[in-house]
Image (cartoon, rainbow, N blue to C red; front, side, top):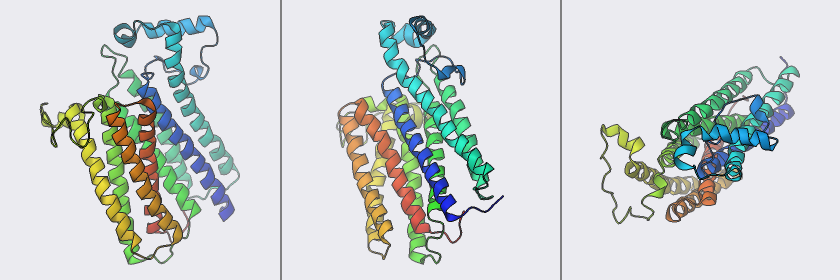
Length: 349
């Protein structure tokens, strides 16, 4: 296979960043789908035939009749008309269609670049891993939906968080590889101080990821609709009922008191460590793009905290809650960028 040149690498990096942007949109749309209660409106998984929506009144009625056979309609939405059904159907349909589109946006250019010999040998396995993870994400999405097509029409918070976490993993991995291609020879001689800062930035990225997972459990248990006060939880720093469930571990994933408390704790940790990291890095000699990344990291944190508190106090309005989910990805992206730039690379990927 031919060795790609720097121009080819930049083109491939831009393609991967385009894929990242579509995944980012997918995460936001997935959040809106959940927040509007639309996620269980399509009760069949048809990867090929499901590309087209209902095209006439008969097909709409058939789709609605299928939905009426499941508990969400029978127990929660029995008042729903066909027009009401259409309003939730389109969110879930759009989410699935965008997922299929991402697959094509990735696969077709990948095959083209591979055929033209523009992908370096060591990059090919990374791209294959991305594609496999993307396929698993589609399966995970249906596995999540299936958990709500039962007597209790409620999507499992475990499956929802797994679905979200896999999307974040794919996004982060793709972003990192794209940065490798865009900055193949950063800091050939890496300063010792920068190595330490890079490790801290990577740890911060990991904590942000865990915070996102805790947010997935907040969403999955609807914990955001409780304790809509800040900074205290209904007047208490440590709320009553943190460990009411048995066995103990269930509290961290099923008890809405503990789930929301944990998310607040994780957010507080980020509120403390990111400014401290910013200050320590600011007082070292850094290139301008790293300084810009550090400032963006601090700004993204401020935005995300504002959105999180607003989501809580306003009792989870769709627009602000979706923006909060988007803000989490933006915060993670800036942390990954800073970590990558500080870490430096001595060879191209």
